[in-house]
Image (cartoon, rainbow over all chains, first blue to last red; front, side):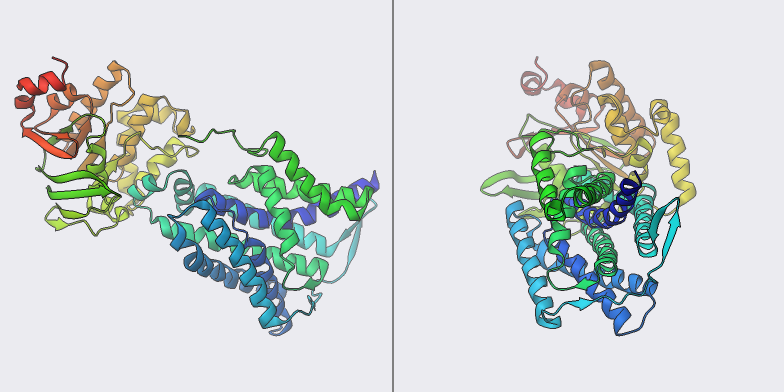
Length: 292
Length: 234
């Protein structure tokens, strides 16, 4: 039992990270029906920015979060404007292939600038443990979990309670009708990319802190897993991405804890296959037939 | 108030509107009737900037609006209620109405107009926190019109407001349109329900395969034998 609770805590902290990345996938998909395959690399970019802020500029970690989120948001906006916006009226396949191309571009661009060596993210969060009811709680895990929950609450508030959030949801439902209300659709899409990228940057720093390693291809596996999380919860649905992220984090940790670490990645993809077979619209999705 | 001159619209090789000219005078209800595919919706969508014309001019309150983005028009008092209602599903009734007032900054005025809407449509008030997609067809149409009213339109473009509604509701919708007009909003109405559309129209046009074939007062067209034969089932 104690081991189970311990694993649950581990799963929740990594699940929060997956949820943050999954939110970017799902928000972008919700608004322009694009699977942004470069999203994992935006996450990697954020990890680098955060690391540089701490390592080279000696910033405190909270400031590194803010700087990395802001810079990465801008990075996401540039990607959207340069690579995706010109394809807004093209086929979805064209945009998807472009996203894969952008992914390669970011990975190899980072390889060129920062080199192939693996950096160690400075361990700025003291490695302290608390024992609560016999459970070992790691300070770092708590920080990660609390930060991801706080960001999700802020996002949920923005989306459900503010004018911007209403505009985002309206654009996701019906772009023409939103434009007729006076919504600048292009700006709303850009803001969505900015928010998704900022969340990915936060996740990037957390993964850097947690696994220590920062390298150009670090976005691949978490990106893919977060994508599975988004599909699991129902792509395009914000609460779905949150649930999916925690679910994938938990499942992965249980498999690693009770089975074998060798299987933990494979299990995630087995889940993807199962969802696509059983309920392709995801946990919270409604099965909608495409209108002809 | 609205003047469309020699408007041409193409969808690829299809010539959807051919030299269309119409004039909407301030304070009037102008109806545009015609069969399915005649180009009525295309004309409204072009006026509100969703489709770019190949040639022609559109002037609203004396200004050329062809180059104006659709999102700018509500600010100038030109509001379009699209075909099929297009309410935002997943948003509540209240949120839909707030979207209508998206560009307005006068909080007090918005509140006042919201009260007016709720007074006129009590059903919307009682369902204000409900997902708008759970409303019935008639209620959704009322919401779509109310959402447009929240933008304080001077010219309202209505596309098939009676589509898919039961006869009793159709009557109610036309009463509402007349009421909105009486309160000072000019209306350009597109309808397949020619009888009702002509009855409330000060002026009307008949559109056939992209061309205006007839124009006259609502009454003239109602009594025209051709119109009776083709559109009124007489």
